[in-house]
Amino acid sequence: MKNITGTLKAWLPGHSSLKPEELMTEAALEAMVFSACNMQRSGWTHVGEASITVEIILKPEELIASKIETLRAQQTKLREEVQANLNRLEDMIQNLLAISYTPEA
Image (cartoon, rainbow, N blue to C red; front, side):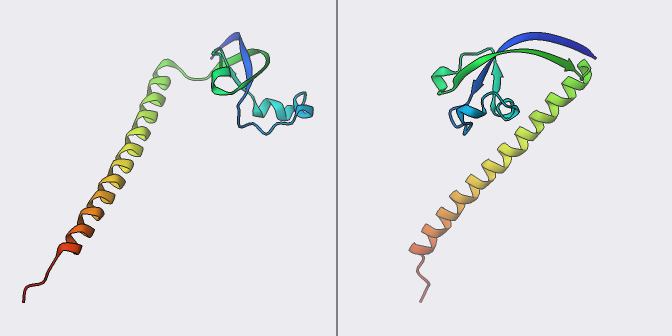
């Protein structure tokens, strides 16, 4: 394992319900997002700077395996969304066919 240290900006998302008096509490840490990017255009409020130390727990091969797992989860989600859309379209087609169906005499 290896530690890396750096400085990031602390942001409160636009949807945060954190009250001003809570800013100096531990609850604020849970509401904050830490990023090097400027998030103001997304409606976020810059509230400070953070010194962060990250303990890297993954070995390179574990990182690759974790990324593959994430990609497979995205594949599954996308398949489910596509199938739901296909089912919806098929239902629409079947409803239209049912409207125009006239039984033979």
